[in-house]
Image 1 (cartoon, each protein chain N blue to C red):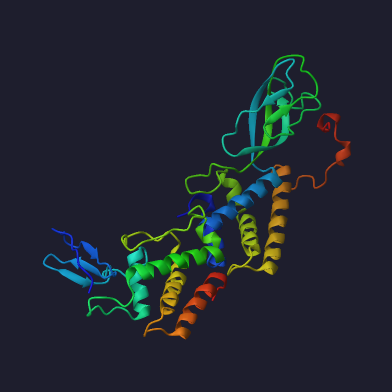
Image 2: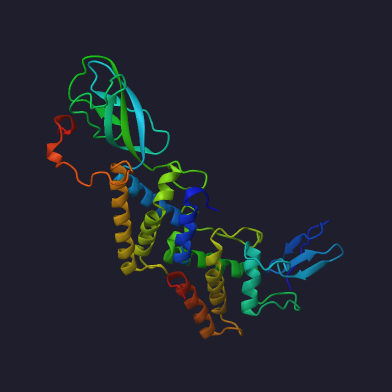
Length: 158
Length: 207
């Protein structure tokens, strides 16, 4: 298990992410493990995307105090998905001056700079790329399906 | 959220074009408005200029919004009747008035110019143009925007066939706007024009 370095004197609701990407939240008495923000079903921030990606990866169980996929590995896949999205649909980045945003797991509250309608495609890409990793959870056909879905959502209506 | 006279166009296009990005929609509205205003001469403003002897080139004052595109008419503000005060008045470079002959006296002229939409945009990031133009020709402008979007390659909404149809509708509406405006938007005015080579010498351009 990785070393914990919880901040001293936390405030209620303060979050801490450990080295492998597990998020803890101070509930006033103790550090509680869990999702980035379990109180919302929105997709406005990086942490909220991570939540949904973990659901699709079936990686929500933290009883072992660690996720199978670290936040940083998923965020790297999100960043890669944004690059691929730019290659296929540069118009999505017009509002951002054709600059591809890049995220890291130290800022899970960072806003996602693209329009909401394209976020599902990004989630599917991150799930597909994560599933390509060589571990016991790998399902090649599932990964391919998610990656294909990503492309088709960007260039086709359905 | 969009607002003002472009609001309905924005909503019409968005419901017809799935997955289009707001910024792209605004970009295409800008392009269509630029083409619409340049082609129809519908958006006009009168700009004053003081003419003095021995000067043949004058820079017109900047219009309130948009950019000068075409010189429509010039008249002397102190003249009892409105007619071109001199032959050979040109504006080859938009916004720069050039005279063919040296003016004999100082005078104040009014230059009626047709404008095109340009930066800066309004607070809703739409072209800053008289709202009546957008309201009156909303359907035409919307068709133009949809045509441009459908022409884009590799998009969920790419559709060259429908793009052609929408472009035809746009060009038709744009032509109607140009004619309507040429007749001062008055119903049942003459539906013919003198052949243009009958025009008086003062209307002919020198080259």
